[in-house]
Length: 422
Image (cartoon, rainbow, N blue to C red; front, top):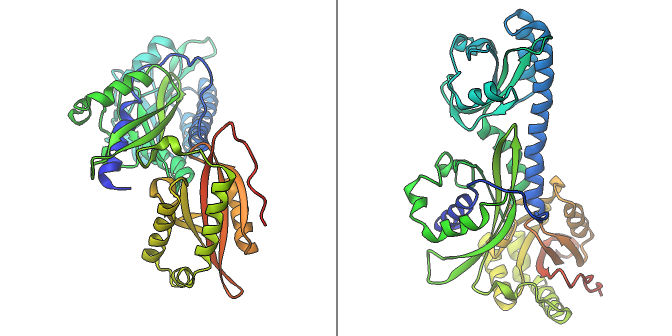
């Protein structure tokens, strides 16, 4: 994605995700990619919750400063690859035991004044901090669970320190690698935790002058910030021209122990008239199908695919889309089962390996490639909406060099099956 355009997409995505929320009036549709990412983040939070509860129960019996307590901390730490250290903290906010041994130098440090500790002492409930500057010397997230003795008196807490950047990277990247979407995660205070532009991580969209200067974008932020999940579309000028482009934005929330993150998915919709998308009838599809079959039979296409000529293939795809602008995208699937790229870029996969079987459609793509026959299918796209997909093989004698396929969007009210293969 063009650097300036990516900046604009980032700017819009992170600004709108800040502020408090009230309960949504009705369930909001989440595109599959966003749904999978949110579920992945929640599953890690659920595992942490279960482990913290178990550790707190054991520490209520062993106490928070003993060899047995250190064993509990080591077990807790081993269960979570994103954790840096595990500690016990006394009721006055002083760290009394820390694992692993490399972090025992923080024993004796007092963290009582940290915001999450004040919440824990006020509520006697588990808490998760915002990103804080830790006594370990780096920004991280502290998760605390109270520990009570058999008389239900608070004897301290158990802490798990999480490197949130590694956690978000490991959970999010596998779901969106190669997909035509951007995912952003922010705290409710406006701090960016994760995004396609790593240079923006740590900036605050509510206080940074770059964001505060964007009056129109802040207006959109006010529209969506009242709900923990939602969807909207918006227009931004293209930095390289006077034209405008539309973007779709879907967002949801994940939370643990009273601390909420916003998770957003941005899809760039190229062109000035997005309303035309979805208005596809069978005749248009047949014209596009016939044209793609002729394209795939060209010796030039065979030569480009056989020689891995990416420049030539980009020209082919761009030219085909220019002749059939109603199509959502036209893309190249190589002989190894990898969608290399497509046009428009914003609506296309990028070096996406279908052999990973990350999505339900992947096996059908591979089966179609191996069959060497043209293929129709209707699938929900990870960025949302249903698409009619036509796949056309490119062959050199008996060798399948790959396929070119196009996608056209279905309006919800259409719901028809694709035309049968001849």
